[in-house]
Length: 170
Image 1 (cartoon, rainbow, N blue to C red):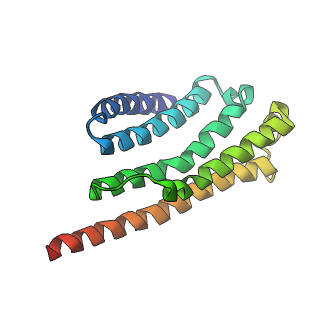
Image 2: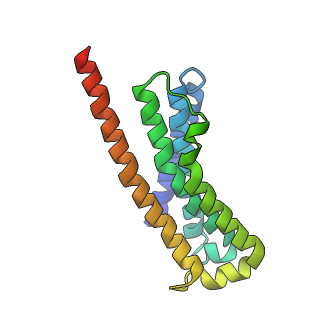
């Protein structure tokens, strides 16, 4: 059942992503939401691949685990950028926004450096072994995503209140 739900979510987000990219030619905020949907599609598709490949999907392709885990660190910042753009028509992604991508890049570089230096066999042996470095690192990604949710949701609520206050003044 869970496998079917992941596949349906992936398909729905894929259709939404296509529609938003098509609309995004004229509406940049739709393009930002489309990038968010793309991240959802890729990460859910990788999880679905593991489920449909049996319990050993990540065992056969351990690098897939290292691709989808860091992508989780992009979900919240991309949605935040979409909300920012919706509240401000002059919002643009600039170099100062690169800091939002630091968790993603740091985990991606860490995971790929482990894969390149140690190989797939090391990943296969240690990924699900409790208290191993890899297990703790994947746990750190999950913690980072939860912290991101807390921070970004508070920023979005603050943005909502500031925008509402400005509208009341005018």
